[in-house]
View 1: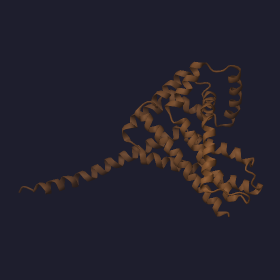
View 2 (view 1 turned 90 degrees about the vertical axis):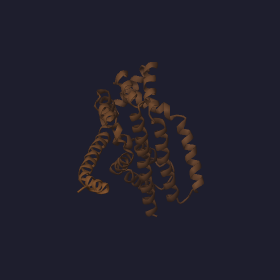
View 3 (view 1 turned 135 degrees about the horizontal axis):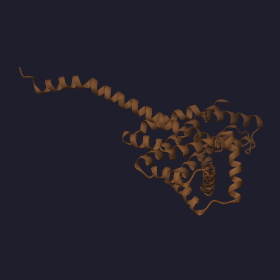
View 4 (view 1 turned 180 degrees about the horizontal axis):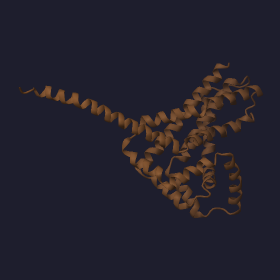
Length: 274
């Protein structure tokens, strides 16, 4: 007896579903493993900790004139809000939401390149105690013998191929706003309206926009001091591809999201101590 077409289709689907589910599960596992590798080999933790540490150092000296006890509490709550595990959780979540499988092979090839590994290792090294000491030495050496024009062009090309400058401006602005908002809540002498906070933050953003590219260029010259220009060029070339563009935009969104969520936690904690 010949089965109706719909019945045949239903039977076929019943046989296919287990295989489709298995294939989907296998793909999801592979994607998750690749994302874990990306987030591990790209020094996200070092990058995420840099801006909050700078803000902590700036405000630990209490430039806003809060009572000492309140300023210490504010800095402590800021550090708790920006704990690295929470930041990395938010970063991974954004990557999972935006992940595009067609770039898998390109990511794997890029991560396996010696130039990629050298660049990431150099970035990681600057955030160690030994790296901090080395930065002082490199700064002195660059003052004694300024980099060539060609070397500066290589560094600028790397910065311009990514959202480094915009990301730094956006990140610092988010963190600065959180401190100003916290001060407004904690201060017995001065509180700010939302429009006043917007004005203060806008002025701060304009100020850092005028200097941040030069600051970052100097940081990169020091960070990659021992790397040859060819390795930096090869690393930069990846960000000029579609896969590199996706990685850059996703990383920028991930960092911004992580900082914004951390800011929300910080402000909530400040409000709860009142």
